[in-house]
Image 1 (tube, rainbow, N blue to C red):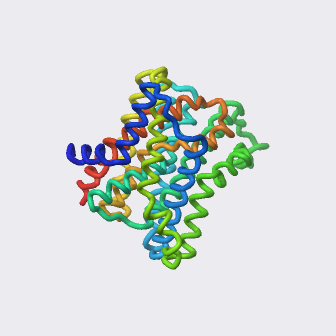
Image 2: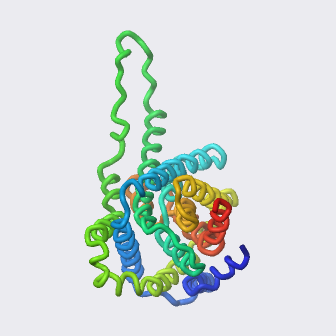
Image 3: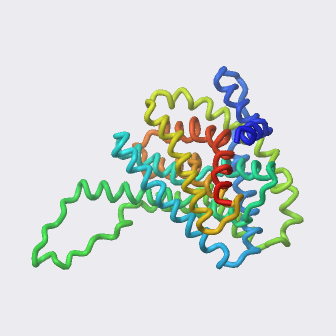
Length: 339
């Protein structure tokens, strides 16, 4: 286990991430050009979507149906657990609890990309359709968190009708009526979902026939572009560390302990639905990661009262570095117990 953690820490991508954190901590004047981070993010989303689509074209629906159901199950369960723990045990207010539930219920594309690099380094194969499951798991966490928020607010503001002969036939309102159309649009057609789904569909359509055009830019250069992106993410994470410290040890503990628990749960579900060692590891990584692209974009629209310093600070400042350094090798080791 220690050897795998050390190997992961000494990989170029992780070392550049650590360099970014150090630059932020010492208040260096180094910074990447404005807009480059957005461009690198778009590149990674397209690359992952294309690779998933091309690989998915080689599989039948019967092969991927169980893993897809397992992914949806995790994407639904994780925000429910997160909201319950934050509200009942950590006593966090509702809006910030929902913000964290959406953030931790969704996924980190970059953490997933780093996990792929880790598996490549240890020569472990994985199912090609795992890239498609990134897209599947990106959406439920956001929608479930917003659904729970609406249900809780509606129950607290609307009195329960008394049973009588006049209202025996009472029919509840549409449970999705409180979700704003802008929220659904941001969740389903925001930039990250749009690029992932669109690239996945394109890759699925062109299949291996598109490799001569796609491979030189989006496959061969992937690892090098990931280095630049993680350097920028290190800068962002380092700047968030001071913000995170203001929110107490309980939230810090949550950002460390529960992603590891979710990762173990993801590995368990992955092995149950028939994934390989590499596939179960990636399922664990997806479950353990926290979104800082799609979920925050939706939260800005639907839950503006949630403090970005909390959900972005914990996701970027704590969970992201933990997963990137020791989490990925840990989930790989846990997956090894089942194989």
